[in-house]
Length: 294
Image (cartoon, rainbow, N blue to C red; front, top):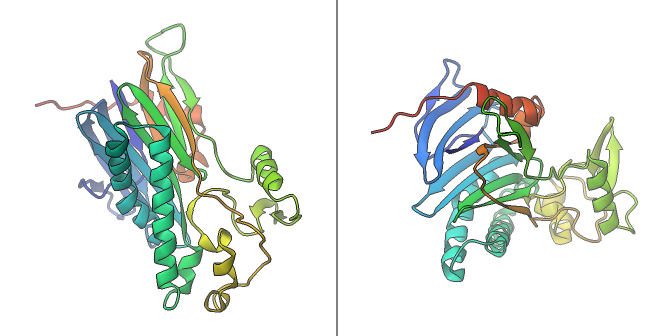
């Protein structure tokens, strides 16, 4: 049984809230390849994050969208990414890394158009963005696509096959400039911009503003014309930018599902800032919830 777990609310299903309304969870529900559950802890007065799951006889999609600067980008991804995935999968006769890239690109382009239309009345929307972690299972193959510092971690039995042990396997790359590897990647793409990555109060940030190097949205960090727009300049201080500081190109990992694969955890950095991959996997492994079958 493969069980998918993610840590943000799912609009399609009704879950249970705690007494303070900030903790939300959903008990196990079935999908094509096993079961899934969802939980969220709301940190801000306005929930900026979204998640969703789609399951059919042949494919299961899981998406977790961690918004920043406002909820608009994560909500937009929640409405548009899955329809594009299904559209391109149908057109190309199956799921592939190319289908996933096309779906992210189309979602980014549509959101950029929305920003352009909204700028006269809501200039701050140019600084709204969302990290995204997407999981897809089709024909026994797992795809994980990532933008930003959300993460997908697989729990599997160790190679010795012991039933009482589990191993954590990270399936995504954190696109966060706190990582030296990511900083070097960003700097290599901007050899003529010595201020592309700056350390502010002990924290590395792109242009001294944002830690993640990939996202949907944040168009003022991708399109110089938005950064120079007089309307946006009333909202934020401009800065010199010769080329996009961020990208919406997802990193994609594909992997055949194996008999020792037990479950997946899809979560935003709100979880991974507090739990290591190994600890999160141990929690899921040691505290399974019974599935009710009818």
